[in-house]
Image (cartoon, rainbow, N blue to C red; front, side):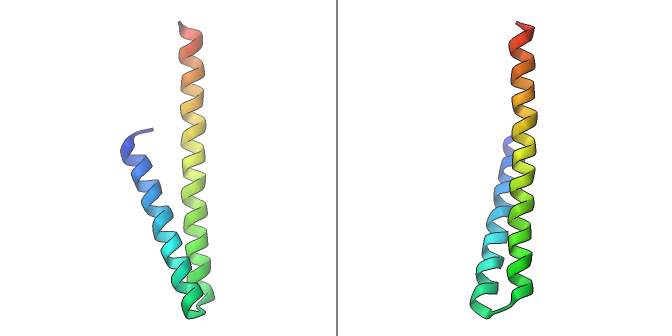
Length: 64
């Protein structure tokens, strides 16, 4: 996973957290839900990238 992908995922996570906090403070359930969804999406992307990276590591280990 490139550093740019990691930064994009982290930025999306932070954006989601901010939206969720704004929703909490303004009693805006839709904004809170959007923020939670963005955070979940970013975490899922990160997990997928981690699995791909682990698969590459295993492949490289057996290629040696």
